[in-house]
Amino acid sequence: MKTKKAAYGKPQRLKFPADEAANKWLGYAFDAYYRADVGVAKGIQQEERNGRKLACAKGCSNCCKSHTTIPIFPLELLGLYWYVTKIMPAETRTRLKPQLANHVAGQPCPFLLEGACSVHPMRPLACRHFNVFGKTCAEGEDAFYTRREDVLTPLKFHQDAAYEAMLPFHGMVTPEQKQAAMQHGYVQQQARVLQEIDWAHLAARLES
Image (cartoon, rainbow, N blue to C red):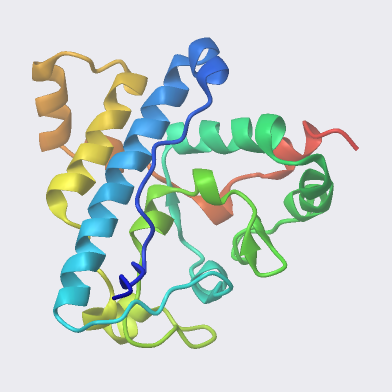
């Protein structure tokens, strides 16, 4: 009997030991993303047990185009700089550079290349948490507003765990500091809009 393939792969923590050793903050980002991915996988499994089918799949980038206010946190921004300048294949970086340099606020995500996410391993929490069931989003549709019941609600325990993993980056390391920060939504308050960031600054750091 064949085992049914999961719609969402088994989460694995990113590992770049040398880079983590040189940049302690990178481990915080990896931990946050892993915790989020575990929660998303569990949430999808719960929905699947209720007969729901995940619509999101490789090759679908409708939300990357229609969502023009994707939140991104400071640690995530730093992580994108690291990934693009240090890890991304040179050929991809070359194709991405003009897109970053010419990006204008309100346009689709600047990291979307030929319908695929060029920074998928380091995509922000907002992207990781957004999953749609039933049917894929129509062009220009934001399913969160048009059919909220089809959009995955992140499991709060795991979502909070991801936020908590980011707190040491902001100097909050004691249990008391973390508790206070979580109660006041400190991490969420640091969010910026991904599409409103001056990505030309990152483009300027890339080799021609």
